Image (cartoon, rainbow, N blue to C red; front, side, top):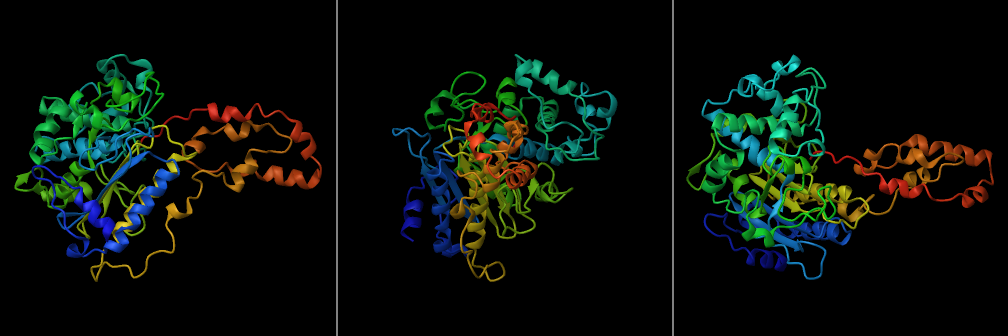
Length: 479
């Protein structure tokens, strides 16, 4: 309980921020919520990220808000403070920004979900592009690829936008699912076309300023850079990133894009999440209709709603959120999950792309996200929602694949009598923190039986090829 009191004591909301209440007053267990401290701290200790902001809210109040670690790994780095530290939100931009803007324009009758994209963006035409609808873009079923390296070919935002318009479809619209940054970019451009102003200007005027989210927006001002958590140390643009969007495509688009570019604090996102739980109105300020929120956050196809993702035990939703929960994640190590049945939200912001010391930081953040949602859900004590027993251990306690290679991965590095190139043939396996494919381990086991003494010869083999796996830089997945 002391930890909770200390965490609550540092809350210094200004303006119309959410009030802080004790867990017991909103039907939650303070003792169970303390698991959050252990889970998040284990991620820092393992080297997954230097610091984190966490906010859990229920029934209109903050019940757990805390900063962990520091903005960077340096000893002199400032500590993380949930209502002060600003993080690059990455793909949370898709829902907090782009999808919300679409909801507002839908409310006003200016955006029709089943209208063709070419109606709003005449340059997006040719072939099956004329069949792509706004709804399909929101569901990531518009036929577009996941992305393309705009930053390699464009030097200005206009050139980057031209590349987006010219990108060919990969499949017939509506017949498949590919999580696409390009689709989100087109949605952002649709908002701008309808509104007659930039996406950043529209969101500031229609969402962030009315809600008092003063630290949320694109392209942070110089006056707040000291409070921004740094991201990549050695990016393609050639210098450490702090206060500029981490995503290279969003950067070449001018720092304002439908798929990435937003910065914000966990405290600001708490207000945004509560607005959605309150039916689109917060503290007397109306943002969007309750019926529109329900339409955009209901399951549309697979695990996707319109813009949002549905909680199915993946991507930070954990095992205990209700079927109606919705949320999203961001590549930099961010996540936001909202459970309407529990009247609860869970926010985690990190900069796990900042010189991570863990061998598999993607696995670290994936487990911490899941554990955070589980700990919050397990802390609800309402009779119809309570879970009787806590699990014996959490993913973060087990830390599977965080830093030590699995037995299967070790075998894959030592194929008997074969080139080690197979272990690096699929760099995406490294990016997703998965062990090497089974076929590479089986041959070594069988050959070991036939040749009882191959160790002598393999020990003399040079290990020059092993660093090749480290040099392979897999393409960053969208998140």
